[in-house]
Length: 115
Image (cartoon, rainbow, N blue to C red; front, side, top):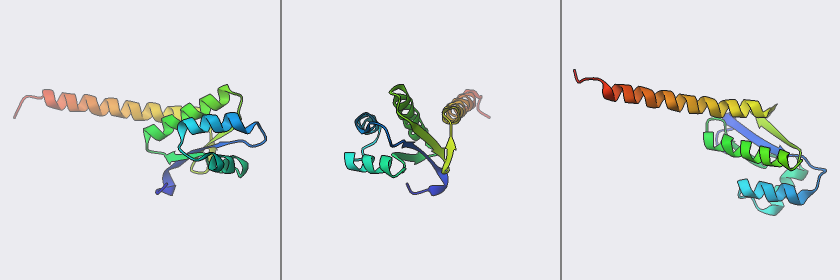
């Protein structure tokens, strides 16, 4: 990732069965299997994204939820600090709300009579 100041990511805990973790991670990122294993074993991010990219955050939420549903320990990070799922979900909601507000303002401006 280019901009290190806007990083969010997910790590998968080691010490659990590897194949389900890898299978799920492969659904959400295009890392090769051996690199996913390395990330898990060495406590590295399986996926890193941009704090300001709604798609990255949504992908992390989906991966985290699927890992949790399969009882696989995973941790979320924001700027290299542990974060919780609520933080990520609030970011996505905030970006959605901002998009809606901007859309509404554009619609209002388009409906204004010409000067």
